[in-house]
Length: 219
Ligand code: NAD
Image 1: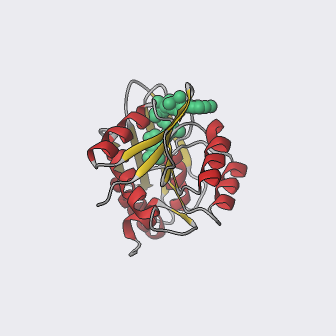
Image 2 (image 1 turned 120 degrees about the vertical axis):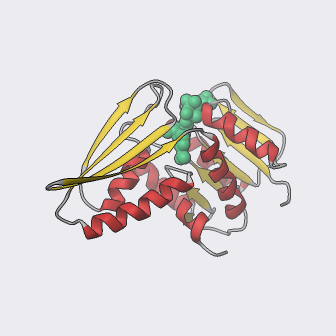
């Protein structure tokens, strides 16, 4: 795979550091970094990755437009208005947007769709557990799971310790309960998904893509 010049918004955060470490291992080169300490740049990124906070979105979209850089966005907690802004920009600049870049969560989404179609009269509840520093509640992934279920089910959020991310969906019938659980045991798994998304999006001309597209769409 050829070397890709990338920019990273949220470069000194937990995810930013994990992504930088994997991108370097893969032979890619950081040419732009942005976080609360400011902007560092020594070239034009071929892709701009954002794992920061919703407040940085305007800056990220401005940089992407200015440099015509495709986007890989993992930040969670956007408002509907911000999601529309991303959608609008993606009509000209290709973007991947996902609240979860792990392969296991994509599999969980498929299983949950199947079970909710087949267990229509069962109760369904989602539980999500994350580290104490996580700002948004419920998690973006819990919202994706609720969307896959297709109805307004309960979401229970715990913020404890240093857990990278745990999501469970319980289906309850009268006399039995079926629970599916996904645990992210390391942030590296998200960084690996980001690397896949980077290699995918640099080949696109425009459009908004999900991580599902990255994993399952034949280029
Ligand atoms: P963090 O707090 O450790 O890092 C955030 C980074 O963003 C820091 O570098 C900070 O300086 C920067 N930042 C925040 N607000 C800023 C602002 N207004 N201006 C400039 N820089 C700003 O957070 P984290 O744990 O690395 O998570 C970052 C985001 O990624 C969160 O929204 C989190 O929910 C999300 N996340 C997504 C996935 C996924 O797979 N999509 C996985 C993990 C985390």
